[in-house]
Image (cartoon, rainbow, N blue to C red; front, top):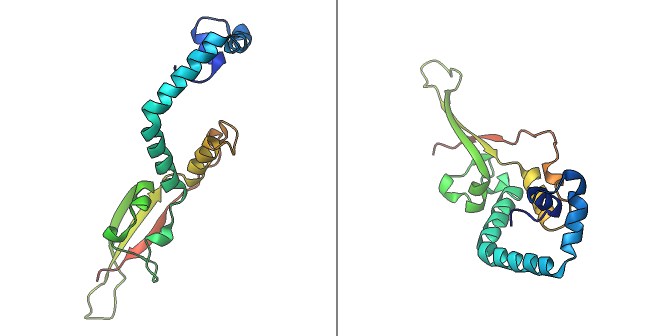
Length: 160
């Protein structure tokens, strides 16, 4: 079973695009075809049950990632070992940079400012996919083009 789309299955079976939808509808009413689809879906569910759970779990990590979980009260990043694993699953990229602070008073050393720029996967897209899976949104709504927000956050690291 390639997909659950009867029209596409009819086209792959060699029917014309014009008649594929009608053929699919007709075929789905045939008891032996309907029974075979049920049998194959059960097999797929058994085979991929754990994988489906893991995919949904990862989408939830992305959808519900909260920057508040990795920041301390001074709005600096907590040490990486204190970050929840759920947040780390949502991280697309991390970029670390060190900069010298502007010159201080004469004779004083310059302070080094550390920054991490973190980008996470698209939260709205993950929510859309979850909504589709749960039947809240129509199929394909998560994949409709929407302006991609620049999801990211820059904060300082406490060097203590």
